Length: 215
Image 1 (cartoon, rainbow, N blue to C red):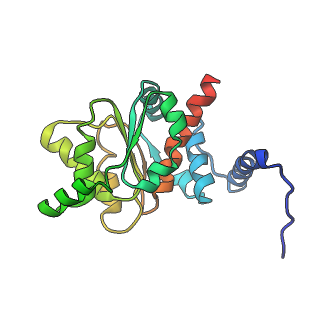
Image 2 (spheres, rainbow, N blue to C red):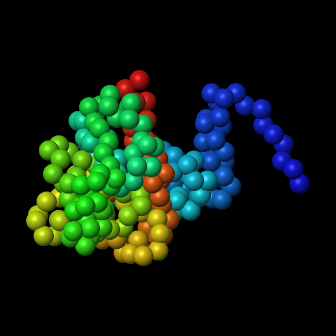
């Protein structure tokens, strides 16, 4: 059975999408926390997957902490160039921040090969040396999350905020769960689902919320 085509102006497509998301949540009798709903809905908008309404987990005051960091000019570090490309750099730069991805750097690949570790491990080590607050947005490599956790245990260094949504099968669930019992502020998607697009969507939800507030 064919569905009717809605005639919608281009500028209204996103608005209508979010209306449909809310209608679908209501139909499924799924309630999400009001404080974090704009992040969850942005992820659903990106993925068309309503399971995120149940699997996205937020530490105490996660939204306030992340937005405060961004307002103070925090940088974002991703584990893929896809994630880097998806983050709204114009809004981030207006707040004084930049986005980084070290994964494709030749020196990172060389060091990783010499040490017998992943590029994600070396990338996170370099990110830890950035001399300003950093939000880690991990959407692909569970080894990135594991490396962050190991640096915490071995050196006492702590990340300012972790968005942990890698996708896959090997060590993905365990890597995410490492942060659920720490005092590190986080947004984590439990289970196997995630991806660079999800990490970028979470970052953009926070950035757009700040932009809306300032407007």
